Image 1 (spheres, rainbow, N blue to C red):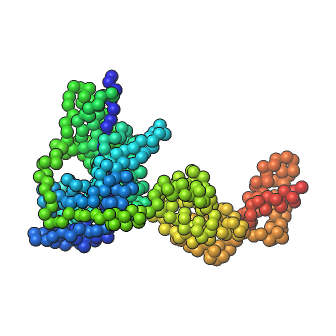
Image 2 (image 1 turned 180 degrees about the vertical axis):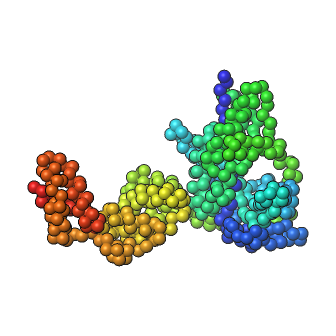
Image 3 (image 1 turned 60 degrees about the horizontal axis):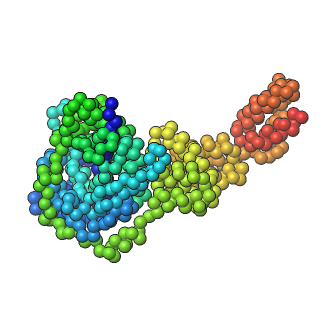
Length: 477
Ligand SMILES: [Zn+2]
């Protein structure tokens, strides 16, 4: 059998985090009653005129700079003509001739542990369309224009990826860059990041690209990976059977794990693009560009290096903590208060991750305040509470952001460090458990575990297990 190579390029749409839409003052907030975030501009009323939101340009430039693109300082908008019920103007304002960013690229790690650059052909600004809502009887479709005019950037990669793993690595890296810039929350489920996959196959060793198809409707990394595998197999089967791949747009049905044809793939000329007559060209002066450059925040790679250097935490910790901007922010704020980076990192990597998984929550949903985590770390550092009490208190912090000092006080959870009180409890436990004492003395050293447990129980968990162990050993001599 012939050996095939998969060639993949991505078109990624990202909704920008501006408060208002790209060409009007309507809110971009997700949700909200249908058609409540609308005005004559974003519903395409005749005579209404667009006014460009400056923040959209700044976010697009910020993403371009962070992905090593050249910024088009003299760029403009074009009109892409097409009819669809969720597009009230019958055209979309986009960019074809002079996109705002070009010729960039980001580095990803490959499966073999090497590095590879995925080129970025261009990034352009455009407006989002509305949303069709189909009724449950399958008879009527309604339209919600809240999303119409929400600013988007479309990031078009070069066909540089060769596997689903590379695609996921690219998307994860891109998402992290954009999240760090604060340009978008990039939530695939809510549609603020959407990826279309262009895929073709060719025989290993050939230069020429095969005919590609485009797959839409992919709303999770897992769906993207499955769609790539499915489409690759479908195209190989066609070629093996002596048939041709047709250039078309396909919709991936993740439940059925199959893609089906939507429409033949259109070319730019099908849209009769022409320069947008209602908007003036966008001139990005050297001064403005410099301002945006100076405002660029620290990105992941720089942060990771700084954490290792400044906080002396291991590579592994720094990698996990910087894998999410929100987590990194909590880490830094907590460390600034308690000055104990390794302990902060442990609470975030172990207990926080465990609770997130248990509650099926995203890192972005963490609500507790750095102050309370810092207070908890202080309580454990001072041996005021033992580790099992600390875990219990942390769950309360995680769920309700309680003040740990107050909680420990009110619930009497402070470790009993009074040697006398501990000693008399242990004496009582020894007297009540002659069998275990006998076992211990006859060489079954494990029996001490039971006695420690009994003591902790009698002390309602508020003793220091190390101290209990020490006193018990001493008394059993
Ligand atoms: Zn509007």
